[in-house]
Image (cartoon, rainbow, N blue to C red; front, side, top):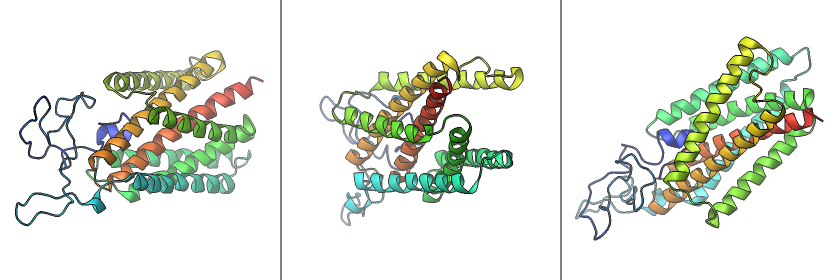
Length: 300
């Protein structure tokens, strides 16, 4: 099952790279062919989809039949996902703290620090795009993204804390952690059912949200002020809440992606994609919390 996370939606844990779609076997009674690719129809959430990882190309070959055998040392586990995600998020946190300390946002240095932060954010975005088009996960790209994203977050967070709302960064971090924990519990308890309808709703909501924010930014650039007002006042609060909800939906889709990868035996290297996907989603949620809390405290 593919996630709608920007990282997974392009590549996911299954692409035309040998992980899925191997030699389809005879269909079982009342079920799809074993080894067929459930993504072939374009519906990553089709009911009764076959195992997309029925054959692992990294497994050793059977000397008699030539058929690949499952190699437990080459398949992704939850521990792999946790460790890679911890490394990626840890890199974000370390570089964010360093940029906060080394890139001052006082009036004399604000322009320079802000420029470095924006440039780092653009580099991070480019690295995500490069990884999304690569056939294999690259730890260097993932950790590079985390480092540059940390610089961006550090500068933005420092500026917000200094000029808009002191203490809002800690609240945004706690809010992000609370959303992560809440969605994880809800997913494990099966209170959230990730299916085709859920996938479609999340994608449609995310596209609409991003388009509205882009339009608002264009109006702000050419018309001055806050554009259409989507980032201030009552509308800003409403859109901040919507942005957090969309991020929570992305988390549920990412959890499903990881669960399927572990269950069906995705190659171990895919844990880096899981880490990258989860990190980008958490960054989204943090930024939305930062905006929302800044509006709320700025209105006090």
